Amino acid sequence: MKSFKRDKLIIYGPIVVALVLIVGILLGNIFTQMKLRSIITSEISKQSASSRFGVGSVHGLNLAPRNDKINKALYYVLNDYVDSVPVGEINEDVIPSILKNLDPHSVYIPAKDFSKYNEPLTGNFSGIGVLFNMNEDTVAIIRPITNGPSELVGILPGDRIVEVEGTVVAGVEMDSDEIVSMLKGEKGTPVKIKVKRWGEPELIEFEIIRDDIPIYSVDVHYMVTADIGYVKISNFAQTTYREFLTAVEELKSEGMKKIIVDLRSNGGGIMDAAIGIADQFLEEGRLVVYTQGRSRPRKNDYSTSKGMLKKDDVVILIDEFSASASEILAGAIQDNDRGLIVGRRSFGKGLVQEQMNFADGSAIRLTVAKYYTPTGRSIQKPYDEGLEEYYNDLSNRYMHGEFANADSINFSDSLKYVTPGGKTVYGGGGIMPDIFVPVDTTYYSAYLNRITNLGLSHRFAFQYTDFYRDDLEKLTTVDEIQAYLDDVELKRDFLEFAEEKGVKYNPEQFSISEEFIMTQIRAYIARNIIDNKGYYPVVRRLDQALQVAIDTLSAI
Image (cartoon, rainbow, N blue to C red; front, side, top):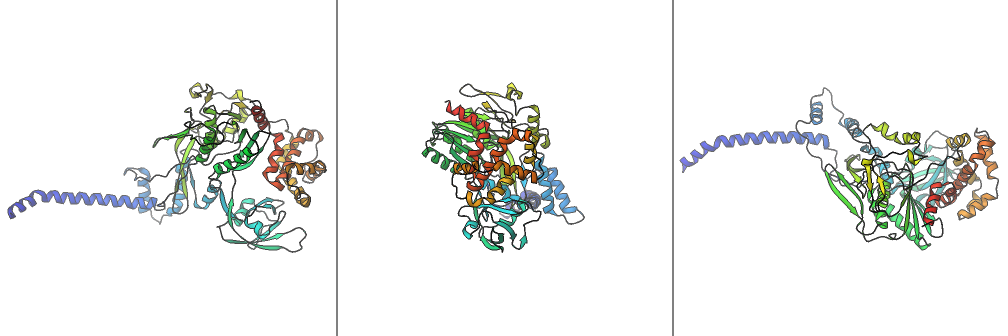
């Protein structure tokens, strides 16, 4: 027995030693890799949140190959550089540099900017709840948000904020972003402000407890005719779908049979919100959109049996600033022959980002897939000539005449697709509308350009509202406000205001732009009193694309 054991030791001993050595080497390599990975990824949180902007789930970070130059370079610097290495600063410099060379929409978000990036997507932030205007270097309250923290403590329209936490903010050069950052903060925290109120000799001090303030993405909804409803969506956030359903329910109760969904200047947001709204229009089982990437298998999103609008005629309004989720919704309606798209060619963003959060509060939004409309077209415009050329695309379109003439757009036959109903559509650069509406330049003049650059229409409207607030706040509807403005010398007062601000009256040029200028002023005044319910119905008379949409639906 002993001899047998000795023989086994003689035979297997060298093998065991070799295995021990191999395991030791492997463990050494693993521990080295773990150390490297720890250095590089120590700030990645164990629980990473995700959402689709078109954005999807978050995936783990794999160990890079041993011959990876970036890891080897980092390891070399971190271990052998003559002085201590500021790892945090390297992260803030290197990560953005890597991402900016990938595509225009992969982005690194520093921790200090994360809340600002996410607010439009989450649909709320914590603050004091006021709408304000910077009037002559002074924060003037347009109105406190209903049931918000400021209204509850007694802040009134027209109040001027003079101090925030002992810092004077009136009459000093401070932009609105700085003011906002001082007033915003964590929910439940107090902020002290002092305001100047008309008729009160002394400043009034308030302590306001910050609370969640909703950000609405459905700007307005109202009936534009007896049976046509209008819904304006400014972005796609977590609350957008619910807001849209609420708007539709109210319009249905007012007799809506047809609907206009306005996505102009809507830069997108959360993809799922656009899919949910598309589902309201499409019969069950229709493809809404699909996504696919190099490491992401194809994922189809189909419509369900739910929906309040499956039989309602629909027009979608888009323009050159409609992007991403807006294009998903427009593409789903167009490719399923479900409605008409009116306006101008959209932006052309068809990339899907995923978000990976880091423990320090920063994050990466990385493009991981493209989305495709139901006919299979990618509407992502080219970005292989660099960021500058990518964002100059809209200027190039304008110079090329695209905003004035649809025939200036030349699509390649290789990008041609056909809908089930036989309509030709194109990929490769935005959604092309079914009915083109050019930019309206009939009101343009040098006088209009001058007052627009100085913001005089907006400034005058606020000053006028402020001066006549006691009268205006007795009015509760847009018709009452417009009737009031019919009986005053609004035009004379504005021309005097403009002269005081250095814009000399030019009768010929003003006559060209008068309807535009005065309609904008009347709309701004109404907005100051009753918010967007006052603005959009007034400015509608200048909105050529909206009128085309109304005429189109009325003819069906």
